[in-house]
Image (cartoon, rainbow over all chains, first blue to last red; front, side):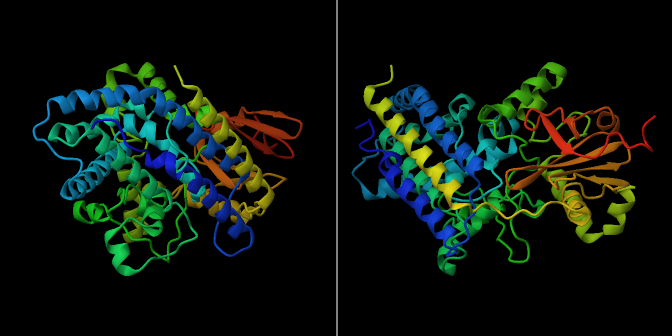
Length: 306
Length: 130
């Protein structure tokens, strides 16, 4: 069986709508923490709608590629076996971790992912603020090894859908902390708030999809600290609600950099976001280093800045 | 070709988006954001540009933005929705900004934040104008 039996994201769409209504309603009644700004909400939801349309455009290519790879599979993995679902759950989640980390640490893939982080809000509409250019960025190829191993493409597609649906509900400030055992194993609203925060301490942390254990394992975990509330958005927040600028600004910025300095093309494309040949811009690592220096030796930082 | 079912799905999703945006507008639960004063502008600028000493500060008369001089740089703060956006541009660029109808329009030279409009009594300041 190679075509998806069902699409978890499509099935969950009514749930998405109802829970946004619920979060706004409870926020309005001051029952939970939920801030919605009208234009920000419009941009987030329209990005989600546009992402669905863009996804359909590229779905044929990515699914055809996974089918081709599957024809050259190493093993025959049955879609009916429980162990196979357990295995695809773990491997898909690990793949997601890798994809997500790459999407933050290399500019060409950050260009496709930045949209999801550019809201200064953190609510359920932010979860739907999805990329229009993920297909072009080609990150779907990262899942091809699963089909090469022998997982049917439909199985991988379903598992990807389950992961996306899981990650929806964690985009909220309405839930503070969950039981300790759950926070230890799974990605939660608290862990993912950190991921969306622009505080230097929180930058480039908590890449997990469903299991936070990958971050703990690979050293990218950062717990949310009550003493340091999350400030959401990106290092340089957007100065516009124009949806086309929201969708394409980093691609355009890359294009301008390439035209200005084509000999640094590799750096502009595959360097970390904020990289520049002369060091005049700041990467996350540089921001964190400056912040850490300020934490430990404020006098030195002041002297350097003077 | 996109199927008719997909087009119906997109149209229904568009209607749902419109309804949710309308609900968010009705709820009026954006972050409360008081107009900037000297202290809050300095706080935000300090957060955005740590280590950049502020030599002079001009806060917008409507409290929706601020402009500061820090050495050869201008630090710009302007309101967008219920948050502030910050950028650093050359001071000369800020000095050359157009001033019309009580507002300066700063070209931020950034595709993600093309310009900032700040309401000020006059620009450039008399003591700095050449």
